[in-house]
Structure formats: structure tokens, C-alpha cells
Length: 203
Image (tube, rainbow, N blue to C red; front, side, top):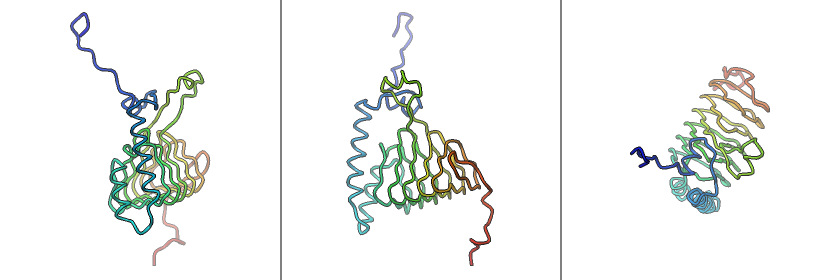
């Protein structure tokens, strides 16, 4: 208590600061231990073969905050912690995907990632003096249901992508993208609605 008899609230941990979108130190022992845990599990996962689906599932359930049903992640896969990644059902990630989950990443059902998709919650201060302090920042990312991210797409910190949307290959998504659209480019922009394409008509 202070001199006026008021209770002091304990200061936030670096992990709490990280998840709150505040400046934090990644070198903090708790965060370093979480990163080490993820690297150990990722090493095991990336050494598995296509003939070990049960082993892959077991590792992903330990690594991730949520691993939905019929989840497929083709190695190699990389992330920072895993414990901040929430994946829905029937998510598919192709080769070489990276998720920097210094803040939460929520991905809905029936989402497809082409090779080398990169999801970045992590960023650094633009003030060079603050950056020299070693402190970092992270902002959450949310991807809706039935989204397709093309090859090499980069999703930047703080972005939300709506349901049923397609992001074209090589796009850099710097701002929110609404539901039911096709968006492409750097920076990524909506080019049309996700209306039925006659060439894609089911038989």
C-alpha cells in the first residue's frame, strides 16, 4: 500500500505488454522460454513425414493455442510462439508459411494458404531512438472463414480480412480487407466483388 492506504496494482509482465499492443522486451525470460518451446516443437514438426499424420497432429495440438479439425500444415512451418495462434477447422497451409505470433492470430474455418504466406503481428517502433531501446510492438491479426491467400502474400500487423475473400499472389496487405471481395497488389486493394465466375462454375 502507499502512504494513503491505496493498493498498488502490480506492473504488467512483458508478455502482457506484448499482447496489449504496448512496447515490450522480447528478451524477457518468460518470452524467451516461450520462444524456445516453439522452436523445439517446430524442429520436431518439420522433421515429420507425410506418413506421420498422427504425430503431426499431436505436435500441433501442443504448439498452437487452437488446432481445429482436419488441419493440414505442410512443413516447413515457422512461428514465434504458437501459443497465440488460433486455427479453425479445415485450415490448409502449404509449404514455407510463417506466422509471427507476438500477438494473437485468429484464422477461421476453411482457410487456404498458398506457399510462403507470411503473417506478421510483429513490428518495430519507427522512432529510431525508441527502436534502439530494443523494445518491440505487436498487433493482432484476424482472418475470417473461407479465405484464400495466394502465394507469397504478406499480412501486416493489425489487419483483419473478412469472410470469403481472396487475396492475390504477392500482395502486401497493410489495411483491413472486407468480406466477399478479391483484392490484390502492394499495397493490397479491392479490385472486385467475389461474384460467381462463369469459368469456375461447378458441373
